[in-house]
Amino acid sequence: MKKLIAALAFAAFATVTFAQTPATTTTQTTTTKTTKEKKVVAATPAPTAQEIANAKDKGLVWVNTSAKVYHYKEGKYYGKTKQGKFMTEDDAKAAGYTPVKAAVVK
Image 1: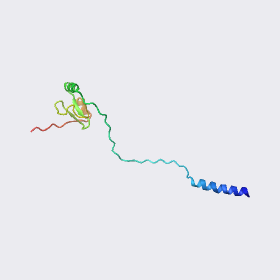
Image 2: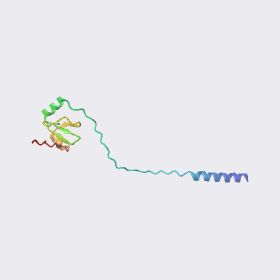
Image 3: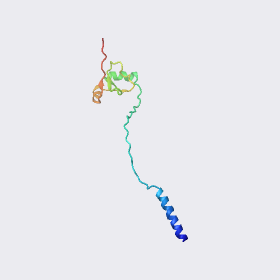
Image 4: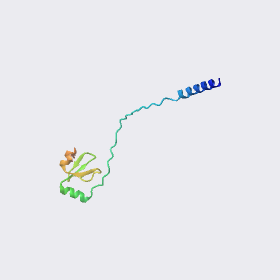
């Protein structure tokens, strides 16, 4: 009788214990958010006066990579924008850059 009571007590205890623990299931949830990602652009050092002079001699344009435009050697911002590089005008056009609009002289 003691064994029967012990077995019933163990069975009752085991059922309660195992009933309370949830079955382990593996589920994978994916949350998608629409966010604007900021493109990190490495800062390039400003060109030196010698580099600007060499680029002018070679007939290169100054491409403002931030504004997606390019400046001619006669322009005010040639070699002076924060983000930019020198390249040929043909390369600038092929890369999708457009010439900067000329200032209107009155």
